[in-house]
Length: 617
Image 1 (tube, rainbow, N blue to C red):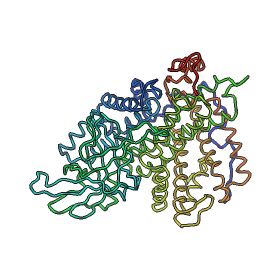
Image 2 (image 1 turned 180 degrees about the vertical axis):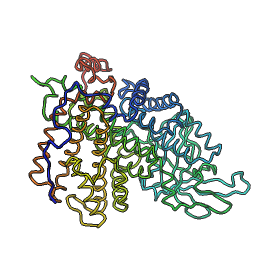
Image 3 (image 1 turned 45 degrees about the horizontal axis):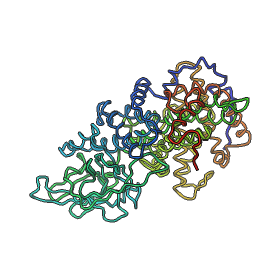
């Protein structure tokens, strides 16, 4: 099947856009969604926390952890408590986005506390005093909430978890009995919940296999107090893990249980199940029970994906601001065509991922049945794209990009953690791909609505090519055809490639839809140019697939390349205004200062061990 390429004049952006004609509020609608004011208000609250990636000399890892937990307590109380924040998806997303940029010590604890702990309890509580007391402690962050899901021997493959919660009926007990929580073997130890720091109370949502009346009743969440400020509770053993050099600053630990006695109301089940005399009653099968137990992961995935995208926007704002000030002989870093190409394509990706993030959030808020699948598709693409952008910016900033004072290392470390948190990205894509192949309706349900197959001429050719790829791959998966155009060692590779194709198509469609909603023509044309860059870059990256399906003849390749050059040239001059729209306040980073060289010299000369005659081996 060959692809006919229309003339460039049929594409939505054809002429350079005057710089003074661009509307920052219109760009805000793409970046921040329907309520930019609320997002920018959250920015100011997070900035007021004063968290910095480089707290200064003499600060230990424990000090940095306490900074993060202190910020969590302060911001939760200022915003009405953790329960209110967990219930307000839009506010929670805004908080995660700005914490990712401005409060790197706070960011790693947000989704675990708000969604996986508070959100799970609030959704599955039966109103028992034991549960409400824990919620009260978590609401004001007198205790920090965590989820203890993964085990050393099983990772995130939760259906095989071995930690056991065995029901011990007792007719004389007021609750009819209690649970015995136990780690049966070393492989079943929980790792790595953030419970390793002394002096801070932690309440865990422990995923454990429930044994009732001698039967395995599947994996359920149990509400367990893991440690008080004085230390681990009796029956809980916590071994702090070594400092994580390539991930976020968190007090990860290995946790085991030695026949810990927990009350009947530690079992979080809402009205899904009950113990009635000598019977366990539940209409759900084991997989459905697990799905209910971990459903808050969906919200966490969306928040982490959007937080990663936000950190990439911050890195771009920092890099684009620095590039014209960095002299290279008679030119600047910003004058280099390779730098322009890299920063423009990364900016297009940041806008596309921002639009996709809003699409995922909208489905989540609307309680759309397709929201869990969208989160599985979106989170991996958002985080992977952000990590690539962060790496691009770090490399373009040279040695300055490796300095903790310039934020990049913290942003990169937190994004590394997001890749694994709330579900490994590769595993999520594979699971989403299998589901798409098995249930074709999901792909259509995930659509933004901009695409109209009955009117294909109204859609740019490069957008049509992305739809063609998705459609072809879905059809092949349903027929179980041998894969073409991908290096598929097995079924998981095929499923991952299919999910990626759908996610990439959704990102472009989401940005195209956002552009269509912009009222003023110059800004709409600029966002259309960004959409074209994102689509053409995706096509270019998957040229092998298109060639294998007879959709990438030499003339198509030439057009993709020439159009990319054309749109990049349009956008390059607009990088300052495009990144200004990200709303990043002036950072404490030396690179953010107008006179970055003097600021850097002053910053580093103030560090201990600096000065005349001081040398380090």
